[in-house]
Image (cartoon, rainbow, N blue to C red):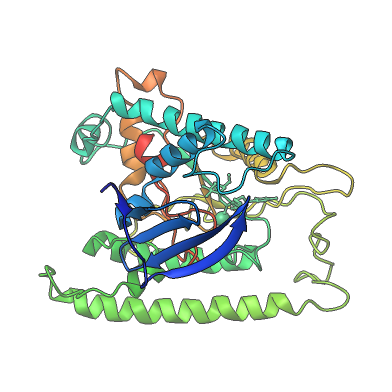
Length: 377
Ligand SMILES: O=c1ccn([C@@H]2O[C@H](COP(=O)(O)OP(=O)(O)O[C@H]3O[C@H](CO)[C@@H](O)[C@H](O)[C@H]3O)[C@@H](O)[C@H]2O)c(=O)[nH]1
Ligand SMILES: [Mn+2]
């Protein structure tokens, strides 16, 4: 990694070039692009040499170098030849804004560096957590967790309507025992079945192939039922939806409706096909009225806290967005290692999971591939 600054004596015939008049002289700019580097050079009429600057590929990608480069550009004297091709004296506000921005970027980059000086690594020991709170043959002492999933528009976002959740709960009765039996990861079926790996590798249970095939079929059928619900939901009748007893569905106007809290998988019946208890599932549609600020996701979370306080009152809350999935089914227990730690648990307010994104657009406009934040926290 690094700079290659060269003074070249002679022509640069193989490079792209473009001539412009800057101040009182003709200046030609040259550049070449290769897979791994960019070279730029400039030739002025009154200058006898070239200054060619090569950027290696790591260099181009390195945020630190970009910051260094821009800081240098900011503090370099006005009449320097590297950074200023033409000095405009009447654009002071523009200059000021860009300098402030660059300085802020540099400061924020610097702030990002401090935690790296004293990194703290923690390891979770799930076996020790189990010894303390989850012993074989005894009722679990693990603190209960309420999981909140919010959605604003179930047609644009993953289909999270009352009916699709009920289908999902039904599917979970078979999916969860299958995952437990064969240690399936990730537990999001769409991503599990899409994985392009040799699924027979390291699997020794002869029943696995049969179970997987059957489960895959179940999942395909589940998807067909969900797609049918999506198709149905897109074609709302003119008079709006009606309920089974013929009365209109109170949620027909998404911006003006009362609160609704149907509950599925209540105490009994919430068992998977192995007879293990499944989490209780509650669907909340909070009240919305025109003219009242509903505070988006934060408002949804507040409504869920109130419902959870009445229905389940879990000691801990886990929040996931409707488009999130776990890639490690032990994640909740790992978080609990921090929360229930005898020494640090009381000082720990929340645990933030690192986040990775699927389906990033090719230009990654939102810098979703940037994981610096999660490497630091
Ligand atoms: O009125 C609203 C608006 C949003 N949401 C939900 O809030 C979540 C996040 O919304 P979105 O605006 O799509 O956020 P993203 O930009 O996709 O996600 C970023 O912002 C989220 C909210 O802070 C974080 O949870 C994520 O980790 C982060 O990647 C989703 O489940 C939405 O359904 C609501 O429930 N009601
Ligand atoms: Mn999102």
